Length: 398
Image (cartoon, rainbow, N blue to C red):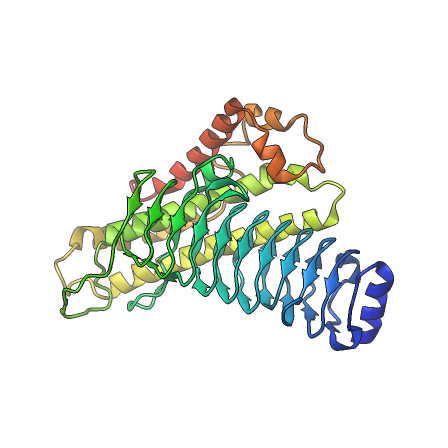
């Protein structure tokens, strides 16, 4: 069967092609996974056996889209760009010239402007990114709706590669235990700014435009400003000599711990909202696969830090105790950070699940979460927080 044959089959299924001869559909595509009501514009390439597209999507309205091994929910709009190994839930919209790579999950109604680069990026519902942004190795949550959302201003850069040649730099803007409840104040990262990972920034924070952020902001509801100074700093650089090594290790553990919490939320809670809707099932399984890969990637990057430190154990007395502790404990830490077969503190509490009891399994996910009682939210947050604490404490036991 040729690409033209597959385009014809999809057309008969209810997929629209304004210029069918200009679209390529790979021979590894399962046509049953491209649902009716989708429009695929000229120049698009649909590839990969894991690719699925829910109903009502629109691909390539402003430029060609390459879609490879990616799962789309319903009503996803991709104006143009490359999307590989990612999961985009219902109502996601991404502008033209996007570069979205593996380890990316965009949840309901998250949006991005033009020329956005994402990799190992997890945006919870409603989070909005402007244009000309690099937001790799980041998690972001906060906000309650499309009119009350966390936002990243245009020309924001997350600096995620170090001169030690590692990426143990993932940053948390918000967290999973509170973020999944869709009831937290939004976070605002001003435009023409940057953050040097790994940092942790809590809800209600506003980082002023033009800032270069290098520290944690854990007190909520603050407007903060950190403009690049004029003072010149010059000193010898030694690879493997990390400034603030304990903070780097702890922030990485916080990030990994939140990925664990997200994984079990998907596996034990979001799973309730997939029944009888194939695109939701495929997005769920794709999300679980990406979260597993994201945990593995963060462990791999922290392992690089431990290896760099181990190679230069006597070059500097700075932070010797912390360095020795990390090197000594890393094998056991790595094993403890791997995803287990079941949540470390058991299944979700009944007080949380009962809160969803009246929801039809085809109910909109965000509507169901926003309909939870305060008691159900608190129970769910406690369960997820216990999971996070389990993995953060790995450092205390090192």
